[in-house]
Length: 68
Image (tube, rainbow, N blue to C red; front, top):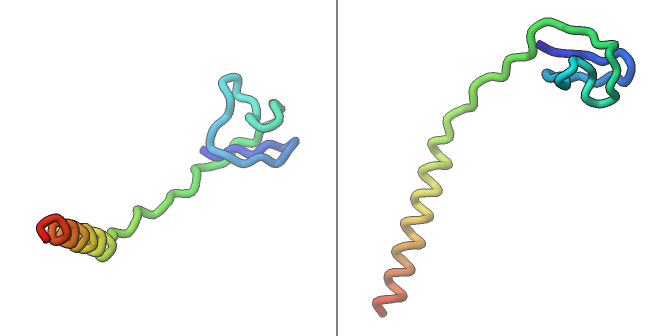
């Protein structure tokens, strides 16, 4: 649920334990509908492959330096 304080214009998804605005402490809260749903994060395959490749190159260079 989303909440909107009519005193300080705070918008959020949580209230304090008493049900008051966490920003100003006012009980004058408007309870809205459902909170906006975030889309799931996109898979980052290209970044994962790049990170793994860079670690492999780093390990190879480190091993080459230690051997020579």
